[in-house]
Length: 177
Image (cartoon, rainbow, N blue to C red; front, side, top):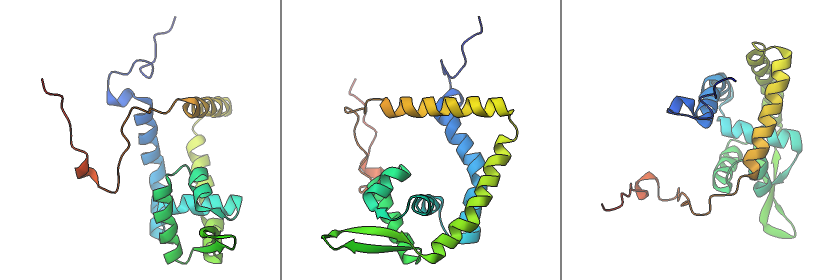
């Protein structure tokens, strides 16, 4: 019987699944960041919103946040940045002007058309190091992990971050002993 993987019984930070996935994203995502920022003047988060809107069409900010897997506050700030850069247009809904539909400008569509194929190529280059059967197995495992993560109950007893107050508002609390 094979010994359990360090992923199943982590003893260090380097053996934690989410840490390893984050490290992979940092390493493999660096070229995407350089392309987005260096060539197109957008952040990776702005790229994500542009890509979602390019593929799924105009939508409300709250729907965009959900589909991009971002919280509403970050999405709102990023949307404002994209509007300021003339890459996104907000159109208030006639029935309720508190809500606005978000639509890409032609400039944003041009960025998407130029950048998406390059990112696909980077993605394929990363996967080229694996056998086709391994890629299919990896895809299935990722789908299982994503489904499992979506089914995890929210940790209701954990405190929520209050990002408006910044990092200083969250002091380390040690129980008196």
